[in-house]
Image (cartoon, rainbow, N blue to C red; front, side, top):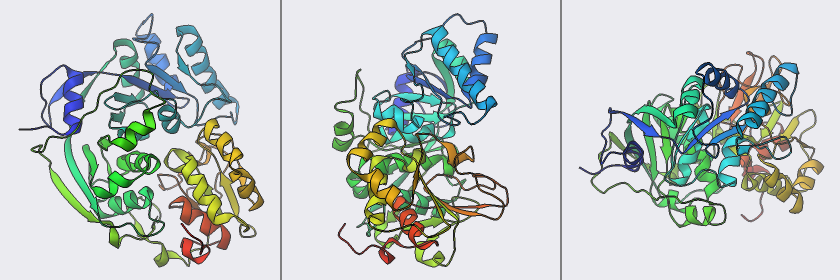
Length: 424
């Protein structure tokens, strides 16, 4: 019996010829990631273990991105713990303010994560790197600490679900819409502890930015990981980024899946997830009467250059609705600089947007965009749980950058076609 791409990566990292779903294995880790929320706990546990050094200074990554620039004394203390640890143990991949970006955008951009890697991170959206053909998953801070010491972690091999996307995408339908539609179809526990393997001609045509978005939100369906087989688009992305060797894995033709789900994208329109779960999805035209107070474009899901370009195309020469707050946060300094060069920042600020420094910030209700009681936000983020972006009696709606930009103009959830009639 053949193996899936996920099973092959796990088998190789376990030093085994093959693995099967349900099997408990110990695997070697290529990258072990922590941020300013989760790493301080791991650092404390690491020191309690009496470790003298991390397993590899080039494979431990520390990214202070959630509460930076620091919003208060507590967040400054969290960031200092990372900084001191990185200095003490000589961590190669530590990113200080000015060079730091949102971790799940920054690591692929910097070539730190590559195809075939096994990546763990004390952040649930570590599954993002599956877009490169890597196995990546979130873990707890204590597991991260143990991995820093040993370079290993134990895992249970997940079953795989194959999602096959075919047909022709409608205008404005992006990877964000495809994954929202998929979560709406299977539910937030529809892939519980399973690998979501995204396949089909539609996926093969998607740019890397859309692939990252889809893999990023696999965890919102309960998945252990999301993964896309590497191809020429993947190789082009890493061509000038990779600084070490990597390996390409592919599923065997006779690999076993717990389920195969076929999705005709021709029927999919831009999606919106209503409060308070990502599975609560509807076509944007069904909810175009809902008024909003804030629009946020950014996060590890949709803060890439391609996302900002879409927003700028729709907002160019227009203004945001009076009394509405439009917040845009480029995910990394590199993206910020390129957006400046292309005139994107100017377009967005002329439309009335405020541009924030690279940070997770508003996504988790951290800072720079917290909601008050009774307020509604439309966000390009990945979660809309109760209180996710602020007050527990606020509401968060999830959508693509195109829908977000259009909605900023009208002050209500809006299909991009309502405000933009130009060419794609």
